[in-house]
Each structure stands twice: as C-alpha cells, then as structure tokens.
Amino acid sequence: MFLRACCKPRITRNRFVVIFLTCVIIANECIFYAFTATNWPVITNNSEDSVRVLIAADPQILSAQTEPFYPFSILTSWDANRFISRGFHLALWRSKPDIVVFLGDLLNDGSIASDFDFSSLVQHFRNLMYIPDYVKHTIFVPGDNDIGGEGSDQVTPHKIQRFNSIFNQSTTLQYKFIDFIQVQVLDNFNINTRTLPYEDGRIRILLSHIPLLPVTRKKIKEKVIEEHPSFIFSGHEHESLNFAGTKDKAQAQEFHVLKEEMKIWNFDTTQDKLHEVTVPTCSYRMGKQRYGYGAAVIEKSGLVHYTVMWLPSRFTQLWLYLIALGVIFLIFLPPILCIIKVYVINFYHLCGVTLGFGPKYHRV
Image 1 (cartoon, one colour):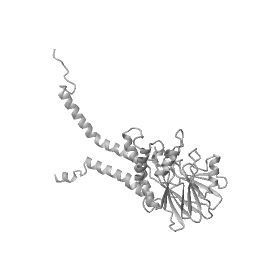
Image 2: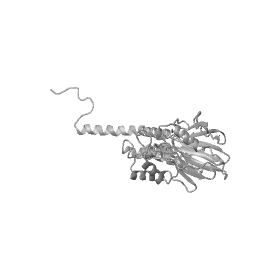
Image 3: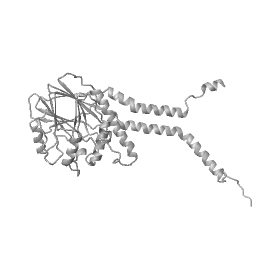
Image 4: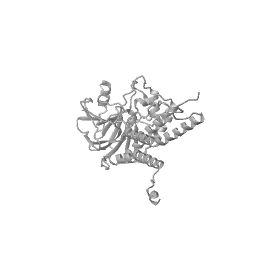
C-alpha cells in the first residue's frame, strides 16, 4: 500500500497540459525574442561626431475591418501588429537611436481610408510604435499604402497634405552634420518638395519609399543628382538589398543581397560611388521568410555602418502553437472517445436497442 502511494504519478493529465502549454508560450513569446535581441550586433560609436539611426520599412499596420474572414481577422491583425510593435521596441532598446525613420507604408489601408478612419489608424500606429523621449527626431516617409501611387490607387494632393499634417512632417531635416531629405516619387502632380541647399562638409541622406537607383525614369534621376546625395535609404521591396552606382549618374550598376546575420556593413560616402540600402519589411505578413529593422551609425567622417536586426520567425512560432494544440488534442483524445462511447451506449439503451449480436433464434 505504501509502495503504491509512493509510485502514484504526481503529474496528472491536466497538470501536464498546463505545464506543456505554458512552456510553449514562454518559449515563443519570451525566450525566442530575448535570445534574438541579445545576439543582434551593436555598432559601438557614441561620440558626438556620430548619429545613430533606426529604420523601419513597410510595417503596414493592419486593420481588422479590412482583413478577410472577420471576426477571425481580429486575432490575425492583432498578432501581426503586436509582432511589429514588440520587434520595434526591442530594436529601440538595442540601438538607442538619435533618429527614427519610417520608410513608408506605415498603414495597410491608409490611402483608401476616410479622413476619420485615417486619424484612427494613425493613433493606433502611434500606440503600437511608441517613440521614447530620448529619440531626438522621427521621420515619416509616405508610401503607396499611405498616399496611393500603385495601380489604380492614385495619389492626390489631399492625401499628401493629410499625411504630412497628421505626422507633422517636413520633407527635410537637419541634425548635427546630416541633411535628411525625402525624395517623393509617387505623385504625378509635380508637387515641389522643399530642398536644402548643398553645403560642403555635410552628409546628405536621401530617404525614399521607392528605391531610387534601380528606377529608369529620367525625372527621378535628375532629382537624385540635383540633391547631391551621400547615401540613400529606401524600402518598398520588403527585401534587404544594396544598390550601387556613381553620384554623377544615379543609376544602379551593382546589386547585392544583404542577408547575413550578425554582420555590419561599412560604406564610405566620401567616394564617388553612391550606395542605396533597401531596408527589409518588419512585418511577417508581407510574404517574406525574413523580416527585421535596419540600424545605422553615420559618422562625421563620412562612414556609414549598417546592420539588419533580424526578427525571429513568426511562422515557426505559429507552427509550434499548432503542433502544441495537436499534442494536447491527442492527449485528450482517449478520454474524449470514452465519454463519447458512454453517451452512445446510454443513447442506445434509452432507445431500447440491445447492443451485441442479439438472439440467434426467433420465436415463431
């Protein structure tokens, strides 16, 4: 009797399921993120002659109302937006930027939203992507999902004015030794963007939602050359890319994929070569296997150090949740079948049906 009591299993089925599910949730929602963030490369330069920049491209914050399969869309949009927000704040913690840049497509439905809905979406965006006080400036570049410009969704002056007004944006920003200049190539209205006069010794960083060097439109080439760029950051492609050309032609002649993890790329803006870095999307809903945030340190000497802070695979995490649910289902399957069997037997008894083969002979 004593031996039986000692050997009695102490973990019941229900307790095991609770422990198992808790471990999966902690691994997915805490351990994976902590391990990833602590392994991001850190560009160590905190001198006054450098500027730290965090770059987010194409977050495309979702709205449950326009997502398919409502009300299931409430869960899917919540998970996608929460993933972006969590990754953003980890990137802030790791990079401690002076400047935060959003390279367009901030909202998934911004361009097609009414003025009232646009304000609500922007407020939701601000809540998700909260900017701490130590960040000196935040730059919001409009993308095609914010003001139109792709397919039949046309850009209008009202959409541009609405975006710039609600985000309190100017197309230029001067900070320390850097001129940040937005190049907006989505509109067809020849809206003149205020530019900064060229000054010797200042680094001029062009910011665009659409990559500039691969574009063949003459007007865009002329605009880029006119701005005397030192370096270009862009988004839209959802991939981590590097285009390179010469400053006098502003045309891509080289192309590289920046896919390595824990690597820092170094670019010299004092040379005749002009580099453009396309920052990957930070949302797992863009159909890409990899997503993350760009981080750069720009030195007064003209050196640009750049890395990608890759996020953990949300698809892997979601598969782990599905596998965990499958395991739990298999654990509870035998007792569920027993319960079903009991109910079926009781049902047959209530209906006056005798189980088994029945009598072999019938009374005549």
